[in-house]
Length: 520
Image 1: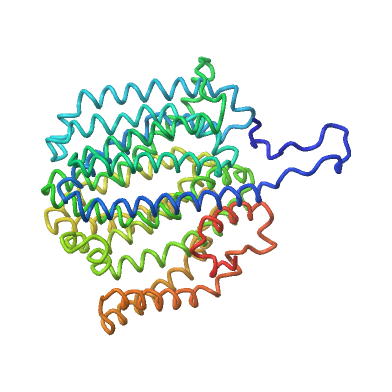
Image 2: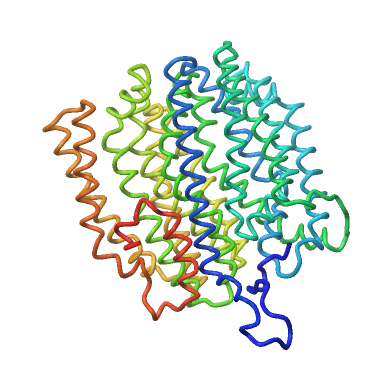
């Protein structure tokens, strides 16, 4: 199984005429195909998770159970950010045959994952108490077993990412989803509460490990090379540190709410935060499965990288802004209609968290670009600054305004501190502020017009089901009209170069919701 690091596929044999064999698919077509599969995969899986969450919230689990689940999920995500020490990204980024160093990657990943889980298992009661959920230690111990399973799956999953094999990845994720959902629902019906999420996650991750091994055969092989290990750790540890800081930024609010407020408030906040993550997961996650590999191919050409990043940002924003505006403006009616009246307290925090979600999408794309060009120290600095400033602001927000104050604090720090610092880091890497501004200009203008239309129609028509559908449709049409002038930028001009179009293709395909505006 040959990786695409050199940018060539099967090619022709040495000395053979160029027409002797069919040409390998271009990088742009491979990235585009991978992004399409990734988008379909992400949308299908997220819609399934969305439907499952509605069933659980309406019929089986209350805010307290969601709060315990939120605590366990937060701890798990923080552990996952560093469970393989960042070394698995070398499978995607490094040149040459990855099978030479994959066994060392697997050994490092498995060993670090097991050590992390052992530490969590011992500290689970203390962690649960500090986070305001003293009865969550059992859920933590079960759910965080996923750390070990994920560590073992890193190498086969890395091969799938390197080869843009998102079709096979979709099959793996489908098995994961079906099994985890079935186990979660079965246990929830039987009254297991938050523990149903934990065992469902373990079952799904075990299935994903088996699926990844079948999709990338021969990759689950342990080995050790001390020279390779040192090189991998030099490459990966800064990335693991930046990733842990990034996830700390995203999840520290859950810890603050859990420790400063009660479990019911935490449950409302977790629901609002999960809703705000819908656009992030559907669009950004699909794009990120190919963006790092795509940016890595362009890292040696600053002009192509800047053009590709700008167009990718433009298309991702074009697809994300209308979703964020819809959920922000219609927060109360949507939550009441979908989840039921008892969840309405979550609506106060949702508009602010939607704004945060939009910032997160841009920052995640910038993160991948900076990693691809080797700016790992800059990333650690940015994420560290974000976390240091954020914690006291969130604590103050929780005391002053509950879950709404926490959400407002998040947006304040992101807009005033983090976005300018990320723009500076991108500028130093060759991506100018003007490029980012052009990418976001039409989507932001369309979003402002759309918000005005939604607010006016909601007051005029009310919040019944048919009225909401009519309001959302009218707002979306107005948005599409507003962003039409940006089609040329999203398509990419000939001056942008073919290389720049590689990442633009990845971003455009990953944002199918923006297809009309992008001229797909």
